[in-house]
Amino acid sequence: MDEINQTKVTFFIIKGISDVPALQAPIFLLVLLIYLFTLGGNLTILLLVCLDHHLHTPMYFFLCNLSIMDMCCSTVTLHNTFIMFLTKSNQVSFSTCMAQIYFFSSFTSNELLILTAMSYDRYMAICNPLHYPVVMKMKNCYVLACACWFVGFIEIIPYMVLTLNLTCYKSNIMNHFFCDIVFVLKLSCSDTSALIILFFTEGLLLLSLTPFLLTFISYLFIIAPILKIRSSSGRQKAFYTCSSHLTVVVLLYSTLFCQYLMPSSMDTLDFNKGFSLFNTAAVPILNPIIYSLKNEDVKAALKRKIKL
Image (cartoon, rainbow, N blue to C red; front, side):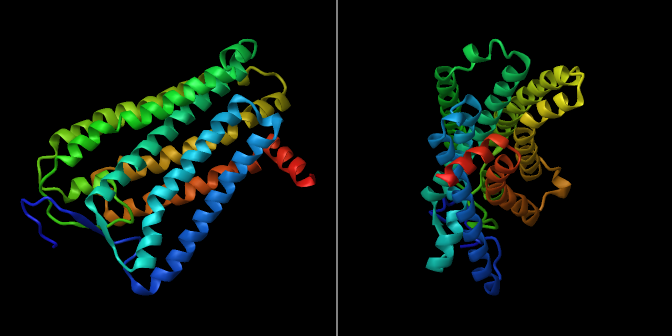
């Protein structure tokens, strides 16, 4: 079924992280270990924030949302590796593939929006501390988080409508470890011009560039007053409060850029697959580590709960 001209496929064959038989078991164990650490780390963050009243602040409320998205994104993408190893089948139905594209795209979009909300929270805390309790009260944070989730799930629908209308595929073999819209575009022999235009206009401008610019602008406003602080210890403390969030932002946007916006001359399937693996497996496990190791409040909360 390599060549499927003028026929709508009913299933895709996912090649996986590696098609070398001897590597299947080690890859399965490695991915399973990463996934368990991802769940464990992010669940620890969630439990700490829920159980420790010192962490009942807007910053950690948004961090909980980020942890939920990391777990969901890892589950949506990495479960294929587990299923393929256990069932010895690389076949994924068309509807399952489309559902995976939708949820992966939505969770990624949600994560960018939540990171933008977190940057606004840091901006208000540092640049407008007197107005912070009023502007960032928990009711407003709930509304902002719900808006991020709603927009993330709604704005992916136009992509899915156009993707579902693709009727011709050159092949149903996908050289990836999960269904990704970029790989579906490469396999399709239908007219994908409308989908590509939507991908680079709404996807680039609305889903990626707008959150990035808002985050970037927030940090420009944050850095300006920090540099005016006379004492070096005061500047270090102010930078330290933002360093965890900024590290996560840089990691996520860097991997997404390499995954989707790399020049075509450097775009190879294995290259894209490598950055996809880092984005869906490594970044979610790094987030709780970064927030745990670089955040005194989280470490203090963890010590309090361990003593109990």
